[in-house]
Image (cartoon, rainbow, N blue to C red; front, side):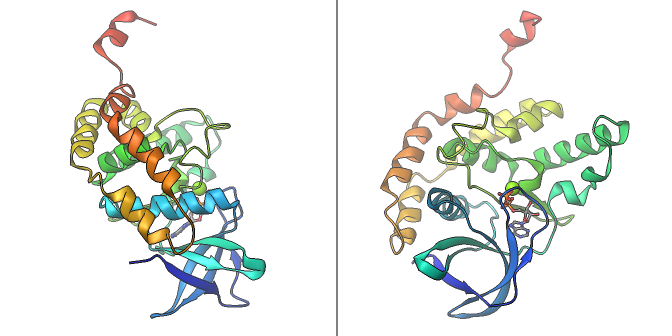
Length: 246
Ligand SMILES: Nc1ncnc2c1ncn2[C@@H]1O[C@H](COP(=O)(O)OP(=O)(O)O)[C@@H](O)[C@H]1O
Ligand SMILES: [Mg+2]
């Protein structure tokens, strides 16, 4: 099976109104299905590849990620498309932007949001997956939630794309630690790592072969998967850290 190709229905583009890279909301046309609402991002090619590869990979591992598409544009450019989940991200959902930074309300909303994110049913799987793809950018704007269902988006800076400008952090692990759920996330995410199918990176590559060769991305993830247990454990405080007092 291959990833779907789509084109933007002319005249349907609107700003998506959030995020940092100029995502747009629009209607996509793709053969085999009726036109649908989507978010399209016109990024550098390595970010488009990371978005598509990670969406396919995380879906392969069972995480809810909106349907990914390659969007063919003028001059042979290719953008990344993601079917509109039709629900807001956690920042929007909890109105976090409406509170002054540092205010008691802002702090309270952040506490609710980080606790909520850490307790989403697929959070341990995604914490392990983020570690595998080196996603340093799992901020609250990249987690969609409709009150019941979650969806995980925005993998543009994974697979090494964020290595120069983003700190080496696993934000879902940090959120769990901040929420007092360190122990739960540590054991649940390492359990998920043991269950992760090691063939999925190769499957994602096969789906993308119609577009580009992602052997490098497969190797990147496979290498990290081999040491993922250690990497994940290192994200959490150890008894030694707790005793050191600093
Ligand atoms: N598939 C989707 N369904 C619903 N909303 C989305 C989807 N993809 C992106 N968005 C919305 O658009 C915003 C920007 O998209 P994102 O992929 O995070 O790009 P950026 O790189 O600009 O942060 C997100 O915070 C979210 O609110
Ligand atoms: Mg984002």
